[in-house]
Structure formats: C-alpha cells, structure tokens
Amino acid sequence: MLMASGRVRQKGAAPVVGTNKKNVETSRTKQLEDYIASRDFTGAVALLEFHKQQGMTIEGYQVNPWLAYCAFHLGDYNKALEVYKELIANDDETENQMHTYAACCHFYMGNFKEAEESALKGPVGTLQNRLLFHVAHKINDDTKLMVYHQKLQEQLLDDQLSLAAIHYFRNHFQEATDIYKRILLDNRDYLALNVYVALCYYKLEYYDVSLEVLNVYLQAHQDSAIAINLKACNHYRLYNGKAAEAELKVLVDLQSASYNVENDLVNHNLVVFRNGENALQVLPRLLDIVPEARLNLVIYYLRSDDIKEAYDLIKDLEPLTPPEYVLKGVVNACIGQETGNRDHIKTAQQYFQLVGASHSECDTIPGRQCMASCFFLLKQYEDVLIYLNSIKSYFFQDDTFLYNYGLALANTGQWSEAEQALSSIQGEKYKSEYCYLAWLARCYIYLKQPKKAWELYLKMDTRNESFNLLTLIANDCYRVGCFYHSAKAFDVLERLDPNPEFWDGKRGACIGVFQQVIAQKEPPDALRDVFNMLRNTQNTQVEAIIKIMRNWARESNIKM
Image 1: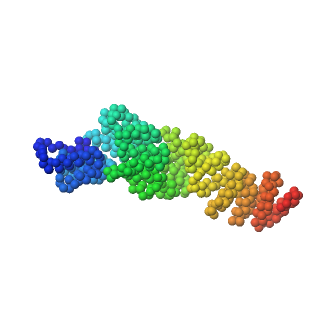
Image 2 (image 1 turned 90 degrees about the vertical axis):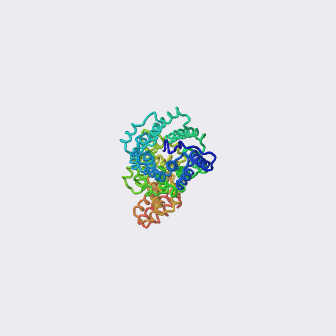
Image 3 (image 1 turned 30 degrees about the vertical axis):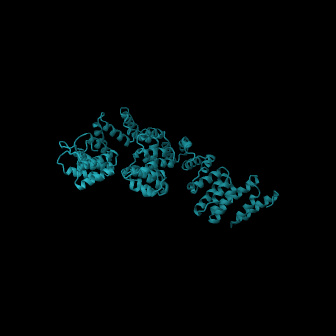
C-alpha cells in the first residue's frame, strides 16, 4: 500500500569505501531488497524487527514504514496497524498519509467503520477514494458507493482495477471481465490480470476457458499460490475432488509461512476436495477469513443430518449470491420438513423460485434444479418433471437426482419409469430410508409385482417402519387388486395389533383372492393360505366364509 513508500536515499553523504561498516550496511540493504523482491515478507519482517529492536538503521530504508509495509503484505494487519499508529503519533502533520495506510489495515481486518474514519483523516487522493469506494460496498451504502464511483478516473489503471473488483464482488462478472480485457489489450505484460479474468470465467462457470486463460499466467509463475488454487478449483468442477487435490499438491509442497491467507485457502479447499474430511477442525476458524467457509460448513452439517446446526449457522446470513440463496432454501426446506413448519417450507420455495426465475440462472443447471425444487415443495409434480427431464442426462448416476426424479415420476403415476429410477440408486443412505422403501414398494405394487414389495418388508429390521410399510402394502395391494399379498399383510397386521379395521381388510382381501381363484387369475393353492390366514382370527364370520370356499372347491373338484 506504500506508493512512494518509506524508501529514502541519503543525500549529501560522502560514501566511505572499503570499511567493514559500509560492507555490512550494503549487505543488510541487499538482503532486505532480496526479501522484498522475492516476496519473502517473513524474512523481511524478521530483519526489520531486529533492526528496530536494536535501534539500528538500514541504508536507504526507513525501518518503520517498511516494517509496516512488509507486515501488511504478509497478512499481519495487526502488526502493520501498530506500526502505522506509531508513525502517526510521531508525526504532527494533519493529513498524514499514514492515516490512509492504517485505514487499509482496518479494512482488511474487517473494521470498516474504523477504516472509513481513518481514511477521512488522510489526504484527499485516489488511494483514499478507492478505499472509501470499497468500504461503501462492504457496509452496503449504495449512496456513498455511487459518490466514490463518480470520482474514479478512467485513465488511471488503479481506479479501473478497483472498479473491476467491485463488479466482481457484486457478481457482475461479465462487466469485470470486460474491464480486465480492455486493460490487457494495452498492457500485455500485465500477466496477473489473466488470473482475474480466469476468476471471472470460473464464476461464470466457463471452467475450461478459465483454465486456458490461467495457463498464460502459470507459464510465467508456476509457484503462484492463487493461480494453483484456482486451477485446482477448476479441476474440481470439471472432474472430481481427487483430480483437484492432485493439482493442489503442488501448492501444499510449496506452502510457506509467507502466505498465511493462501494457507487458509488451501486448508479450506482440501476439506471441500475431500468431501468434508476434517471439516469441523478446519472450517469453524475460517468463518471470518474465507467467505465460502460458512457455506461449506453448512453443507457439511446437512450431509451429516445435523439440520439444527446448519440452520443456526445460516439463519442470520443475508443471501446475496445464487449459491447463498440456494443453500438457505435447502436448509429451510429440511428444517420445515423435519418440524412440519409451513413457514420454513414457504421460505424455501420462495428462495428456489427467486434463483430459478432469475435472468442469470434460469437457463443454468442449478437454476433448473431450483425451479424443480420450488414445484416439488408446491407438489406440482408435472412441472417438476419438465425441469428434471431437461437436465437428467447430466445426472444419470447421481443418487440424489434419481431419488427426486423417481418420486416425481411416482407422484404422476409413471410407475415403470419411477421404479427404474429408484432401483438405479446405489447409496445405502437412501436405500435404507423408509421413504425410499415405501415408494419403491408402491412402484412394485402398481406394476403388479407385489411379491417384490413383500420382500422389501421381509428385509426390514425396524419395528415401527416395518409396521408402516406393511400397512402400505396391505392397502395399496387391496387398491390395485393384488388381494393375495394384501391378505398376507393384513394378517400380520392383525396379529400385531387386533384392530377391527385390520380384520375388515383381511376379510375383504381373502374374499378377493377367492374371486380371483374362481376367475382363474390365482392358482387354487392360494385358497389353502387363505384358510390358514382366516383361522388366525377369532371371529364368528370365519367359519361361514371358509364353508362357502370349501363348498365351491368340492363342486369344482379341487382338493383342499
């Protein structure tokens, strides 16, 4: 942030050649210059602090201004701020430039009010305007933002870069890209701008284009932490976590205490690439450092079925970007379904609709997923299928998609397609859920394959859920005319719970089996099982029903 910086050449001093003291001074100067040139700010800070503590000087450099500068670029904003305050205290100038530099420290520490106050104490200039421009964005003061925007100068490179940054932060990625490209046309040697362009393309979901632009910079700076990290993120989006981690390994090997922020980014992204591994150890301390850390910790809680923790973490977040709206919608949907709170369901539906209907997202895959989710919550399953069918080619092996797709198909009576989708799910997490088993059983029943539904029940262990599935099988089989398995289900239900309604259901199903045997739609052997099931009930109607069935069997020459 030091523009003309604290470097001061000593004038009027006659050089003393050949003395040890002069050689030592030259050596210190060169050592500091080498540290700064190689961006080894840890070494620079250590050297400068030593000289400060010992009351020593470095020829051509003022210790305190350069100590603040190096601490700032190391990311140690507290230390830089302390030094700037010391410099301000020792200078009586009303409009001390150090006030502006101190404001920069406050800004990076997230103290935006203090940053504004300190900047206003400094001299009026382009740096002050840029800083106040960014502060206005951070505190969401659009009135001040426009005032400082008007003061930006089109011919000043720093001002245009500042404007592009604000466009980026406000999700105007195309506008930011246009500024960066315009600057690059006149300044081909500004290679770092390729990283900014690549970042914009990444946000626009043009991951292959982002990689192509990024490689221009990486060819010249193979050890760039930001560039390597962005390349890994592109590989994560294009391929998977393992491919991304392989790219990030280069950066892990190069990690140094010189880059605290980059180390935080690496640790954060490794959690994402490893599908949440060590999330609770890494992400909580990064909530105020890496913006995405909060969202990814919420995702971790959702995947761990810890809905309350996810809700507590995101409830006060005011969404600004599509991912934030989507995640807030998901959390509200989950907690609404878990507690039965319709307000949460309505909030989720509104968030999904807002993203899915937006101009920027309506034709994207996430946008269509949002519209599908919105209609799912509204129980408009025909509309759900319109959106899911448009993106199903991208998710033919995704369990979550297949689950939602299968439920939507089942709710519209497309039983064969629903059974195919649900049966394609591989993950045990879904396959062990009662909802999944219930809908798959219903598909089997409506496809006239009740035996498969019965087998699902036999494999269940949980008493309450098996009772519920048994009730579903009994009623749905009765509804579609699969009376044999309906009778079996009602028979078990009646033995578990002597409810008169179960006897009524079993009696009707048994008579239904008898009718189907007469119509030759069931084999005569089915009557033997019916007799056994009827005898499990202590009811005066049983013998009369069995007598009628026996008489028919005798008249039909069927041995029972």
